[in-house]
Amino acid sequence: MTTKMPSRRVMAMARPGAMPLPVRQDVHAFTKPQVFEQWGADAAGVRAIERGDNIITMFDTVGEDFWSGGGITAKKVASQLRAIGDRPIEIQINSPGGDMFEGIAIYNVLREHPQGITIKVMGMAASAASIIAMAGDRIEIGAASFLMIHNCWVMAVGNRHDMAETAEWLAPFDQAMVDLYAARSGQKAADIAKWMDAETFMSGSQAIERGFAEALLSADQMTVDEDAQASDRSVNELRAMELQLCCSGMSRTDARARINKIKGTPGAAIENATPGAGDDWSGLSALLSAFRT
Figure 1 (cartoon, rainbow, N blue to C red):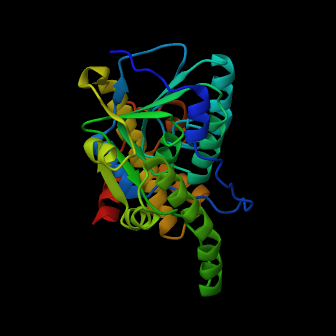
Figure 2 (cartoon, helix red, strand yellow):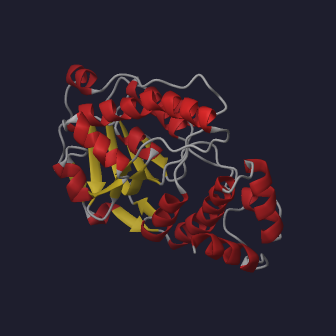
């Protein structure tokens, strides 16, 4: 059955306004390590069957990714939109999120597109990826897929005055997300704020019931690519470990150096996201297990 897209005028009215971007470049908002782990367990490798020259795929983390050399960025999305031109587009998402501020930038790029945007959530749209999903004029989600919303999560160091200043600085961004989700779903802002406080995962049916999506994707539109699944999970272990080490007080540079040293193949993951047979992952797996316990 062909879905009739709303008129451009209606879509422009329905699409929420641009979100604020930070002026501080020393603060980055991330997805929690636990979300990466859940994405690896439940959504890794989920891909769409349908392909086309007006389809943008987002099967990665949001923001430039050190470990894969990829990542979803506003610059890349803007380039893809220019290549597609003045046509309706479809965006396929399966992402654990990443840098929330990069997600906001991507959302702002998408909302400027003059034609209809259909978002299809395949697997997961968590954290920053859920912000991107809200740019759709129509949002479809798999029955076994998830959409996750939470407050801005950052890593910061300093004394209590520094922490209070950072918390105060972050508050407007959390409120901006509340306003965005409320405008898209029609839910009360107070309820949205509670769901964000609780780091809420919504199944496909829950997302539709709460107004975050319009329809369920049929199962025959998705498949699990086993090679992609193995690659997704392997790189995800590295991403989660990096954030765990950063939470312990390491800089990102030191964390990456430590992981590469344990892994035994410095820099290899940047060129090839899937570990080769010769890589020794025993030390990395043991360290990750220790962090989890």
